[in-house]
Length: 144
Image (cartoon, rainbow, N blue to C red):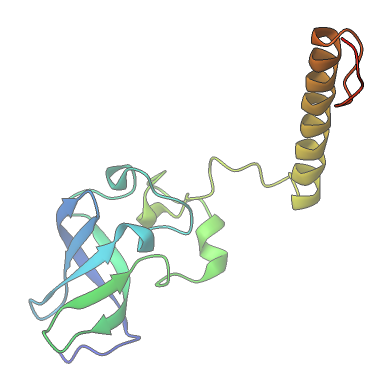
């Protein structure tokens, strides 16, 4: 089988390291999925997403002159599939990558919560400084 950049195909995971997973492709060639290409979210521990001998869908990103094949699992699936639940939770084959996210929370809601928390912390800091300086929080106020 002729491998080409952009092709989406299935392969079997033959090895896992802390930086990625090695995938045996049709025709016996092996490529590597870097940890950043495993899922559409941050992956701290690759073994939370893949296991050896698991069959995965991959997209060929590059084929180097030296024959090294760079693969992506997250680019091999359509974006709408990444939010669907399937039979193997927490695994790329199961497409449950978004499970830990609260999809009801909008960006604006998160920003509002961040601003509120920040304002509360700033108020606490101001009160703390005021109490330490006898009510004078302005610099250069003269006496203490």
